[in-house]
Picture 1 (cartoon, rainbow, N blue to C red):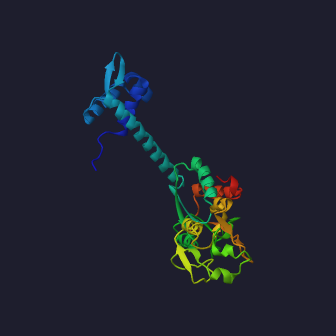
Picture 2 (cartoon, rainbow, N blue to C red):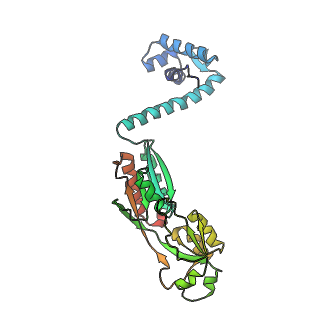
Picture 3 (tube, helix red, strand yellow):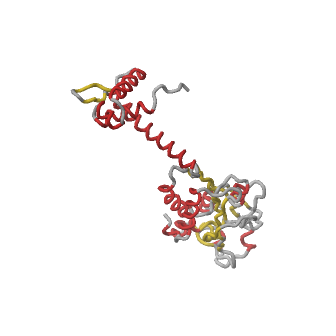
Length: 301
């Protein structure tokens, strides 16, 4: 890539000439001599090969090309300023990014509310969000590639902050054979039917969490796919209530009348990277996650 010949200072000078209405006014605003401002503008136009300004009476007026380039230069100066600010914040310990891994069963609405609250406080810090299933979040955390992790597992060697529970409901399509029995259901009833199970995204010790040992099992890659399969009548599954609230309300899905275990309410936890102290941005995001997790889900965004 060819190095630019025009400096940021030249673009700033052009902006000052236009905004202040002339060379003398720009020189005063920039605390420079008028001759240095005039030279900078002459040099800029010479390097670009196009005229940017024309003199109308005593006022410097932009040419058509000048208007286009000035508009783009304002973006350039703004980005350069943001870059310098970010470097200064990094020098003060502010992170360029926060790596957050979240179990896919955690309510998106609560997470979105926390991230919305984080945006005006982020000071340019990016959030790298990664979704995992079951032990996947644990692996990312223990590998040290996450600053914060939300998981429904009690991770050995980590002290997690307790968040609220996520309710899972055993459901099937309203027309499913299990509902046609019209009685309380046992494990044996379920084992004779197709169960939809979400694949653990972890690689080291994947789990068959929730599988009842049924011979008919379809394993899918995401909770969203599991919801679609169950809504299509392909089987039954334990699904997060917040993900199927509309389907339950509309009667597409119905809870299975199990003798026991029809609902599960595992607690979720917020973990931090124990080998690396949290920076200021990660601490702010951590507190916001805890705050918005405590709000009722109906008001979480």
